[in-house]
Image (cartoon, rainbow, N blue to C red; front, side, top):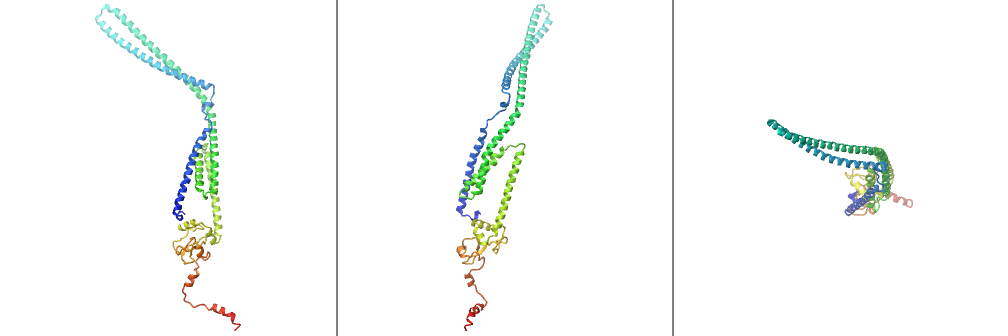
Length: 385
């Protein structure tokens, strides 16, 4: 159809479609912002809100205390282990020195060194005592760290049991909140879709069609993009059922539209040829003829041979002759392309392909005139003679 439009009209239509898309884009941005802010209407509730309000804080505080005690015990344990390593190293070094000294004394066998043996033995005993004390300190810190970890585990286990007990109620509240938010979105987008359907049915061909189509695009985007992803799933049942319902509704609408179209076509094909061509859209008729399609019944017609003047399916006159110059032209043309005569003045609507009187008079003939008219004209005067 765009081939039959004027050049300026084509660009104006493109600009108006751009206006429609821009209008839809701005409306979509506004709608997305509003739909995105709808969850803020509901108060966000956490799992803790459904747990024991008296026991939960105590357990959390116990966990924090146990964690702190475990950290302190671990730090003290590391220090004690370091001291134990130092004590063991000192004891080991002193023991090696003492063993070497004893080996030397066994060679000399000097009696005055007996007192020194006792002194060195007491020093070794002191180092062993330091090592044992360091080991005891390490074991003590290990016990403290173990007690802290076990206390933390017990508190964490009790807190987990409280969370498990409250989880079902929390999930039910989450689902209820999702349904409420979905209801808010549905209450916002469904009226938009209804208004868009009404505009599509009543005003899509009006003078403000760019804004009508822009609103329609916005409503479709808001419903199928902003709403459908938030549709509760329930294992997929809801989405599939909604999809089936939408498919059935859309299919029934398409079937009804097809039936109305066929009935309308039958009624139009029953009208007189002149009235059908008069009520037909000029641009639409020209576009269909350019595609070798009958403008009336929309069936394919071979127009390339230059001889087909009537639709073989519905009988609509597609080509006739100019009443002024007898040139074969489109029956839907407003002016003759050969002489420029207006089709409504130069053509008889029902003449079809009958040659004009002027052309018939100018046509040569090889036969003698029929004497019947002369005889019929003289017959009334015969009785008077």
